[in-house]
Image 1 (spheres, rainbow, N blue to C red):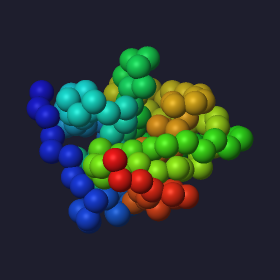
Image 2 (image 1 turned 90 degrees about the vertical axis):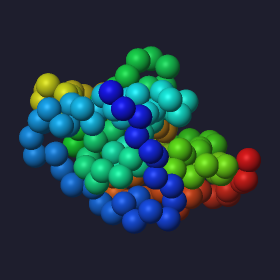
Image 3 (image 1 turned 180 degrees about the vertical axis):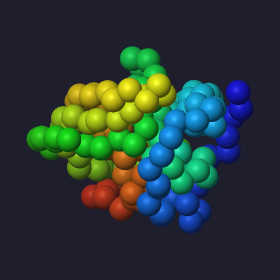
Length: 150
């Protein structure tokens, strides 16, 4: 496995809409493995493929409950609102107050091509929405009501 370099704000790939994964190949499995290793190395809770320079709809998340791998994720339902601080591995030294849905339900494929339904609230819901925004070329600073240098 390998640790990828995380691209930072200003890189074109962070503003592109990521393309769907058509087939889960050994390269996609390797991407998932390396993204997880990169996430843990950076002490993050979520990482989208565009953040490592790969414009594909692939996300890894671990909010402390074990790794979640999402291929071609789609939000099915969202409800409520929560405003909280967010940061991003691609925007070091900045946090912001970002409004998000308090609860989300998503559908995605796992590494075996099996459809999975995941429901999240709290940090998991926030992380899912943050990472799915990356797949659309949206950064948290675009939605933040206020940002702070840390």
